[in-house]
Length: 260
Image (tube, rainbow, N blue to C red; front, side, top):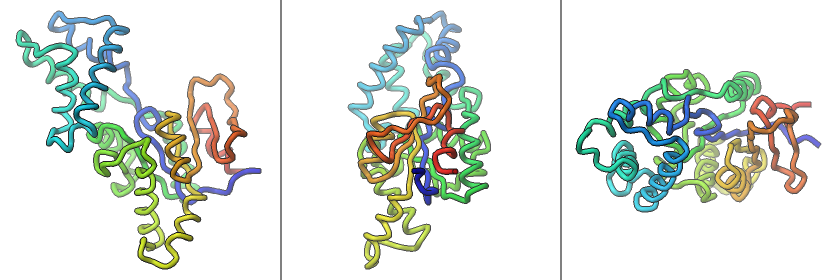
């Protein structure tokens, strides 16, 4: 039995809407090679992950609570990888500049197809809900023309909410905001709980990470669709363990879940 047409769709950003045009290690090396600094990409990937998670632990949410800008957060990540680069003080700044430009990213074609179907064809409220770098996400949305589908009020980022996946409160905040905007219903209204339940039952989140997207959205009461573009079978796959969890090989397949 197919689920009913959604009343709200939220979608992750990094890995779902967009991704680096080339791997992060390659793009770093493209800059640092000018200074004679090249780290093998597999080693750089490990160093980057270790540095990112170490800095993130000390400065969660891109260091916002500590008063850091997002660029200052990334500078701390890069200093742990390359040191202070006293011989080439401009190198780290050049890496940050490169990763802050449109040319470093790509938008997935199937995301555009999903947005066109949801917004233009079905008139379903459509939002971004992500932990991604706020500067890059807004850059991609603007520079790749995603503003056609996304109003500024429909971009929910952990940096702004000061809540982040996998905490289900991240999605609870979005549901409450959409309930107020779409139906004018707030927590003080007598029908709030019933209307909130109805909206949750017809809301779906789409993302590429199981913990942050699927488990988090379902813990909040939403349905979840995991996009795994590495799947060789192109057909949409319904996971029987949970009624409201699907896996798709492409966002082009999302409409097949809901349409007859």
